[in-house]
Image (cartoon, one colour):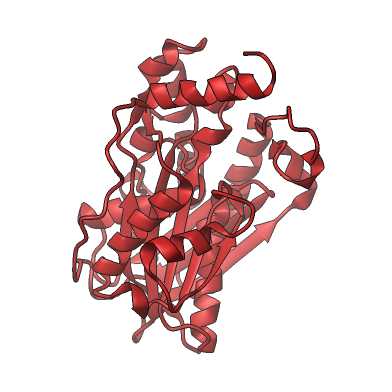
Length: 359
């Protein structure tokens, strides 16, 4: 059976930066508290929509693969922060990107969305239903943040990452996938006020809730087990893994996952320091940066692993192809902004208070 391999990659990180020092000015926190608990120093806040970031990342991935937008026949957008409920954000990206020959759909598995989307793309290529798939992870999580809740407001950032997938050659491509969900724990990481439950309650503003201890405990267990199973199902040993690219949620979770897999730090890619948790966008952003930094060699065995709301988790073991350099480039980028990350966050907080009738 055919399988998918990655032939293109790209990212979009918004220009406005929100530092830990910025957050000190508006909430009861400090750089040491945030850094020691999460590993985050700064994150990006977008002045655009999710579909805009996805479009920029998609342009870079298509160019890197040496393709044109019309070559793509399936567009999958992993996101839990779409521009609208209807239509799918993928439809908006299709129009902006010019991927006119592609069927389009969104996937919402929260932070596990990219790995879930990779599973769908691999299946479509394996059956011959698609030949060239553009898979994007994009999130505008700043929309959900409430600076009155420091337990979540310090964690998240905005961004997008993308890959192009095509039929694999001999030996490379997706070797194994392992996905799981525990809906009984859906309530420990959730966004309320966003959906049919709240229709008619116009004063309600959606709110992000997370039981940090429960999320941490389950993430450490499920990420380690899913990654280990994926490697075993690929017929490999953990010693064969060249690089682990985990969802960038928290350095403590990443470290614990690496220990469970008995991987040394030099085999684990971490970039959460500059971006925070970008949910479904974190793995493709990290993959792009690992390639740009020449940390991935031809034929490298890579493991992606993620954990998110649902509760969902997933891991993929793949062998990268012979090409680790771009076939082309794109000058796509978001429009400039005069606003800082803190400016944008405070604007959204003012809107939140207005909707609650507090301003």
